Amino acid sequence: MAIKISMSELAAAVANEGGIGIIAGTALSAEELKKEIERARELSDGIIGVNIMFAASEFSSLIKQAVDSGIDLIVSGAGFSRDMFSIGKEADIPVVPIVSSLRLAKISEKLGASAIVAEGENAGGHLGGEENSGKILKKIKDEVSIPVISAGNIVTPADVKNAFKRGADGVQMGTRFLVSKESDASEEFMELCENARSKDVVKIMSSVGLPGRAIRTKMAEKIIENKAPSPEECINCLKQCSQKFCVREALLAGRRGDLEEGLFFTGPGIEKVDEVLTVKEIFEKIKSY
Image (cartoon, rainbow, N blue to C red; front, side):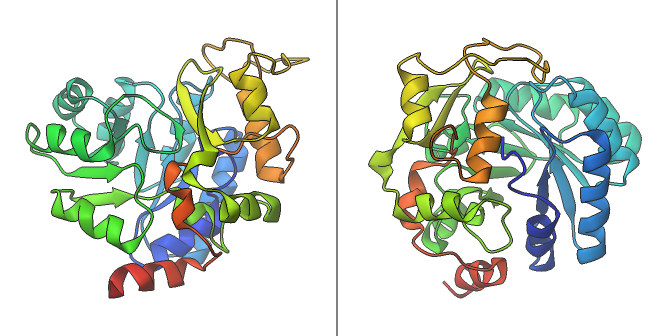
C-alpha cells in the first residue's frame, strides 16, 4: 500500500532502466491515476504498471481507469480479485497478483495470471502469509508454470542475486526504491528509513484486517496498544475496515513526514539502506554486482 510514494516519476525512472515501473494507484482518484499514467508516459517509453489494493473500495473503478489509460500491467494484492483476470484478458493486459500461498498461486494460474508475485512475510507493508520470501518462492515455483517474481526483504544487489539463485524469474523491490531521489516520500520519511535498523520494524494489525510491517513510531505503538484514535470521519475507502484507526490517513501522514501521526510502512531490510540514491544508481549497483 505505497500510498502516493511510488508515483509517475519513480515508475518512469524504473522503466527507463529496463525495469517495470509501478504506480501505486490505491488512494488516488480515477482522474489522479489517469494523470499519473499520462505523466509516466511523458517521462518514459518503458513498461508502466499499476498496483491497486483489492481491499480498496474504488478497486474496480481504478482498474477500469488504468485499462482505459493504456496501462501495460496490472498488479494487485491485499485480497484477491477473480474479476481482474477477465478484465485483463479482455483488454489484453497482463495481470499479476501478489500472493502468499500456493493455493492462491494455483488459482491465479488457472484464472489466467501472466505471472505471480510470491511475497514473503518479511516484506514491508500489508502481509498475507507466515512464510518468508525464500520458502514461499520455492513452494510456488515448483508447482506453477508461469513466471514467479520474488518479493520480501530484497534490498541489495546480493539479495537480488540470491533470489535468482533460488529460482525467481524476477524480483519486486519496494523498500530500496522508497529511499530514492525519485520517490515521493518526504525527507523526514527517508531520514527515518536511513536511521532505522531491523529491530525498529514492527508488525501492526491494519484496519484493512491484515498485518503489516512499519517502522516503530508513536503511531505504530498506539496501533499495537490499541490506542490509535478512531477516524473522526470516514470516506469509506476500504471495502471492510475495523474502524480502529484510518490506515489511509496514517500512511498519508507518514508520506508527509509527520512523525507524530504517521505510519511508515517498510520491511526489515531497511537497515541495508543507508543512503538516498537515484534509480539509475540503484540499477547500476545491481547490474555491476
